[in-house]
Amino acid sequence: MSTTPLASSRRAVAHHLLALKVENRAGVLVRIAGLFARRGFNIVSLVVAPTGDERFSRVSIVVDVESVPLQQILDQLSKLVNVVEIREIAPDAATERELLLATVTVEETSRATLLDALAEVGGIVVDEDAGVVTVMVAGHPDQLDSFAARLDSSAIVELQRTGSIALPKLD
Image (tube, rainbow, N blue to C red; front, side, top):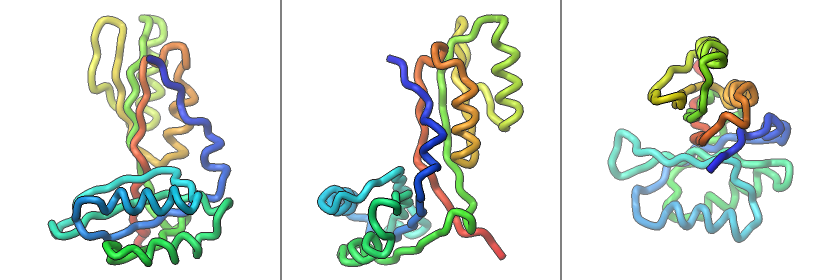
């Protein structure tokens, strides 16, 4: 199965980062996703991770704020019982990262080009076998868009990206 890289146009839409602290209970993610579905809000990416306190999880959501005002999204999220805290993180005031894994076929003639592209973005080869290479790149989503666009789409066996995670920049 072949997948294509995300188009760089994904950043053309106005996106906003939300960091939610939620109770670590079964069904919380379903309630959050259900709220977005019922209201017609678009989730660009969603990542859930544990926090240092096992009672809570952190949900990082990138939302499309062109179709729905951010305040409406915040108001609806604040009504959910298991949402303890909501933090807005403006993209220009955040350190935002994402992870990309890609398995690509490489000919001996294209191997050096792939390795050069990886070196430019600080990526690494994580697996290699008989003309197929799996690479990993972590960086800003725009950087991953650029890297994915450089890959020969016919050579991509599979490409997977995590959602964005972000922390506010320190002053």
